[in-house]
Amino acid sequence: MEFFKGFNPEKEIDKTLVIMYFLESRRGIKNITTKDISEGFREVREKTPKNVADKIQLLHKKGLITPVGMVDNLKGWMITRSGLNYLEELKNEGKK
Image (cartoon, rainbow, N blue to C red; front, side, top):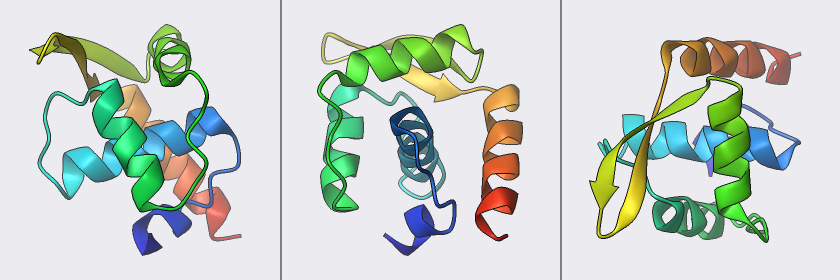
């Protein structure tokens, strides 16, 4: 939860990306699924978006994440370099 608060994300799409970053960097999950993200929202006590897959598609369209394979019949995702740069900007904004 403290990790999440450090970014102070306001939009659902930003919250989704921060949760993905936590799962990738702190939990070591390399192929993040919608199921992983939904569980992440519950962990940080945030309302899970009605359509997590929609948030994933928006992140993908922006080039912030990329598909990396299948996990339990679900598409796995990974944060791109652009996504990491965006997270850095988000974290810096959250400190202001």
